[in-house]
Length: 548
Image (tube, rainbow, N blue to C red; front, side, top):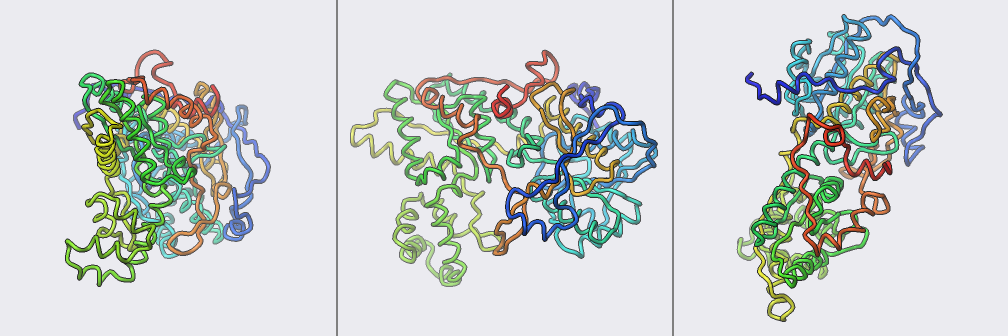
């Protein structure tokens, strides 16, 4: 494999660890825990892994001779920068316990466990991947571990390889599956521990014990670099409005963090749109007003940040989509017989007046997309909607109407961007390289102490890495019951942007000024070498939440 100069230099980087993990470790157990909601239901579903205490690791334990242990590791779901360092930290941790310990990686996600596809991760392989982005060491997949047959099939290869513990690196759904698996193996007394690690660039897997999910820092810095570059171009040419859609279907953490880093003219936060019961027209009017106000000051340019899941947060759009889903599920064959040019009118005639009016207001392409492309469950594929184009088209229509009324005097030339995959496999920032390595190492200490059904937790993240607090949080503590595919299921509660939280409040206090002025910030590329205030800085979100 040919390596770039940066890859060669990065391979030598030694991630920093909390000082509690450097020597012998003492385990401090807290009070019993309970789930964030639906306590009785969660307790009944997880009798063997519910109510366990929080765990914190401290310096000063007695040196222990651990027997060699075989561990399996799975990368689950979408990629996030730093996954390779979680595996490196886990590898180094189990080797420190006993040099004869072995680590097996299951290929292409949880499916590898079920299908018995694996490889042993040797020191040579691990060293190739330290401090690199991506999940290509073993690949990832989206197979859900939820059926007894899968658990039993996985157990066959676990027994064959002598694996005592399984580490699942994933987001909220993957860690929910890890919890279900931990409960099943505990109930059967199979002697297999299951530990989770919190991954997702979307930032929606967090709580008091998980201050941030890994990959969020690097992804936001990567997006903020290109947003800053676009802002610089925008401020140089002074003739385009750039509509930039960012990943984050279930929450707007990425858009908010990037706004705090780059100070665009507009950033839409889905959670605020929902809380204020804003319509699509309200969102469009808000953007159009900023465009008109800037034009009046002679500035026919700007940047707009849009979270990818926005449409699902607009209450009126949500109601339209729900009615469309139900109507097309029942009348799909009849709809398919209608002549293509008359399908729009057909749907308008069949919807309730409120939803018909919204559907009629949508640009042709978006209306067609809503009625044509369904997922296997018969639902609208909202993620395929090019929200950035939808908004710019509707803003253009509104501005044209205002121009006729003499309310707008400028020129509006939109450009469109979607930043998604570009951020998921970037080389991890120093923060993510350190944080991920510490999460993996912490998982090895949880395993050594016989824990199962825990998620690796590293906190106090705005302090220097030596002062980080490592430990474990029971996964059941984060769970609640939610309706999925028509039935109530236990799932880890998603963390949405808190409108009363410090990050949103900082944004809200500044957005009017950013809308009028050209107050762009250009963060530049991630820095790996140099002053610590440049290289090791955590996200603005973390700094504001921790008030440091």
